[in-house]
Image (cartoon, rainbow, N blue to C red; front, top):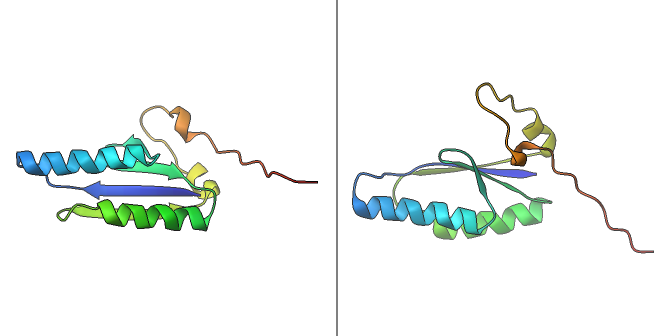
Length: 102
């Protein structure tokens, strides 16, 4: 699964820019990567992982602006068409291998 965070934060004043930068740095620290300006993605290996990061994000959301979270499957993410630009190393499908104990 992939979590997409899309946000539009005010950056008119120095304080607003600082808050927006802090939020972006928080996302990077939590393992998200930027696929487009103000659109960040993270791979999760199940709904428990998604819920864990959803709670963490809620604690770091700035007071002003708009923040959206979208969770999609790997198959849905692979259906994204890149119309302009190049695919990055992060756009490749994530391969998960199941660990089996005998």
